[in-house]
Structures are given as C-alpha cells and as structure tokens.
Amino acid sequence: MMITVKYFASLREEVGRASDILELSGPLSVLDVWKQATGQSALMNNVLIALNQEYCEEDTVISDGDEVAFFPPVTGG
Amino acid sequence: MASLRKIEIIDSVFDPWKLQQDYQATSMCGRSDYGATASFIGTMRDINEGDDVISMVLEHYPKMTEKQLNQILDVACERWLLLNVLIVHRVGKILPEEPIVLISVWSKHRADAFDACRFLMEELKHRAPFWKQEALSNGTSRWVEKNTKG
Image (cartoon, rainbow over all chains, first blue to last red; front, side):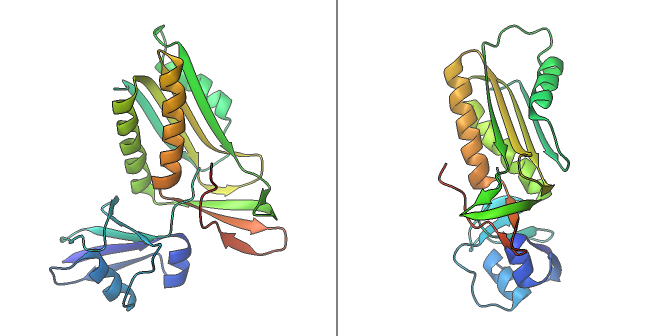
C-alpha cells in the first residue's frame, strides 16, 4: 500500500525532509510507519500524530492511500 | 447551531477590525437578531521568555488546520447558541505588532459570545496545527515549544 508521510516544524528539521511516500505491506500502525520511514525505534514523547488530518494514537492502523503526519506540540494563536 | 461561519488562513498582513466589519456587513446583512459580538485578537509580541524577538515564521499543516478548526467550531455550536463565527489566522513571516489571529463570535446574548470566543481560542491553541519559529535579536532562531498559560 502507498502511504504519504509528512513532518512539520522542528520535527521536519530533525528528520531532514518534509515528506516521504512509502510503499509498505501491512497491517501496520502509524508507529510502524514512523519506524520504517525514519529508522528510529520509538517516537519521542511529545510528538503528535495525525492520520488523514485527524489526531490519532500510536497504535492506529493505516490503510492504502493514507496520509500520516508527525509533528511537535502546536503553538498557534 | 451557528448558521454562518468563515475560516480563513491568510499569508499577508491583515486588519482584524476591517475584516470583522466587512464580514459582518456581508454575512449579517439585513439581520437584527444578534445582540452580542465578542472578538479576540492575538498580536505578535516583541519579547518572549525574556528574549527580544524581531520576527516570526508561522508554519501550518494546510488541510488539517481547516479540518480541526471546523471541528472545534462544531463543538462550540453544540454548547452555545451562536449565530455567526469568523476565524482568521495568519501564516508566514510576521513582525511584532502584526495580528496573528482574529476570532469573532456573534450571538443573541453576551454569555454565549464571550464563552464561545474564549473556548474557540483555547481549543485553537491546543489543537490547530500551527507552529511558531522565532528570530531573535542575537541572530539565532528557535521553535516555540509550548503555549503560554493564557
């Protein structure tokens, strides 16, 4: 399945890119996507995750065509 | 539920008073059922955590921003009797004194307008995917890591 991964703000700088398009075979959680995309074994504590622009948890399961985003705490307003 | 709403992400300087006035004139034209309008305007400060800040870049996650703001608005509309809501948020490079956010709420009575305006602002700060990177007067830059207390 094809998954788009996006990174924002300080996390984008840490990862070194704004996005990835990955071809993966599942079933996989968003945490699995993070591991495969970055090669890191875990997510930092304060990282927020969104699946198709909705907040989700580490164990949320992905489907073909999904967009997964990882980012630090939000600071708008 | 609010019959009217507008959410706008804007990448250049805006005049919150004019936007509110223009939006009210166009969207509330001919109506006389609103007795209260509450507005919040967030403006860029030139100091943060004791350091002089000369500018800021506001980044966002385009589709998610609108989605989250609409969901926050849906919740507000369930809790309070709102007639109209305008949310405007700036992105891109921002200088001190420039407005960052405008939230305007129209309702029949003041409690709904006041309470919903505060709720919308707090929820925006905690859920809407915006991030601030500050440029300091000493030539360095840093990401803002958390919201101020309020």
